[in-house]
Image (tube, rainbow, N blue to C red; front, side):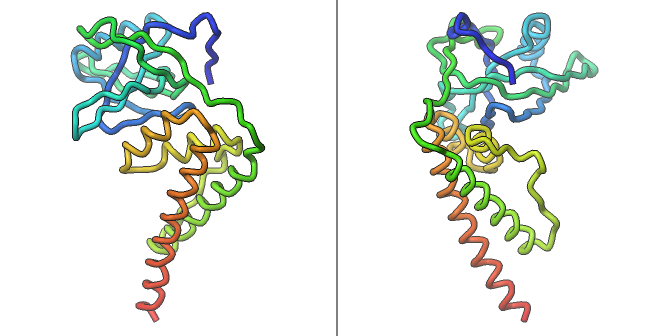
Length: 215
């Protein structure tokens, strides 16, 4: 993951708002760039440092979140009509302090944000979340009669694990946004443990019902 020096704690960053998309550090995000203003953006940043900010748009209100994640282009492919397919990787989180330009695309003055240093050993909590995740995957596989497995490179460090879990909570962008904005790793992992426990209990009930009906 790219590092940022203290001298760049505040900087201008091109911004790419996306409906119900929340990017997390260390996680990939493929994009198809077709709007004219964003084609201009990508061509510009490809000549600079390949970085732009991803912000979630709430489709219910149209509001753009003030906290997002910096994306770095790691691969791109030019298509006809100057469209582009890009693969990005989440870098550091940021908070928008103000918009400095809105045309042809938004540019914001942003500050980088990080989790606070932990006040306790987070390994047991991370291990609990990892076990809950394993339980959910096992029950999902049993319920759907499919082979579902966790990736071998699942992060074991608490911060990275918390980002991985958050990025894989599908269909709950508002919950993902809340997790992105948290600056306490323990609080993020605790919330994920609650979500995974609820999911596990729901899947366990459905699996038990399925077993009864199949007898």
